[in-house]
Length: 212
Image (spheres, rainbow, N blue to C red):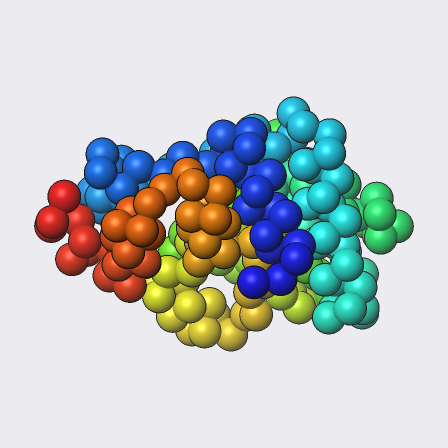
């Protein structure tokens, strides 16, 4: 695990943005049983945590995507992080709704995006990637050239890998599931049996759900 990934994992655990419950799993809207619940919206209320996130994402963009000309936030949870990153990089900010407004000008994208501009899109969390990829299509339809999609945290599910590969879009996350559960074990948030169960969930959420 990288230092920044471990730092963000510790941050998310310390502010209870992430809850691990392998023995009393949550049920997602899709019906999948999950041992983890994540609410990264809490990060905006903690100045140090949000600075760690903004600085970490900005560093990745500087190093890996230096030609980025616009930072895009996915509504709603991705917007504050995109705004802080755009400020650090001195770049324009746009944000993208899940669907066009049903009144006014009917915009789906707010801010100025010019055809051909290179964009890095940011969201707070990647599970399967469905919602952010829908937003990405809107940016592409408006003429934006998406260099990558980034997030604060990723569950590292195979479905996301498949979906982003199909969309031909690179994905990066500041921290991720495997790092977080290792950090949680080191801090005694969970025991060895919990850790094994948590690893099993990521390998096959559907099969894991049948056992809980």
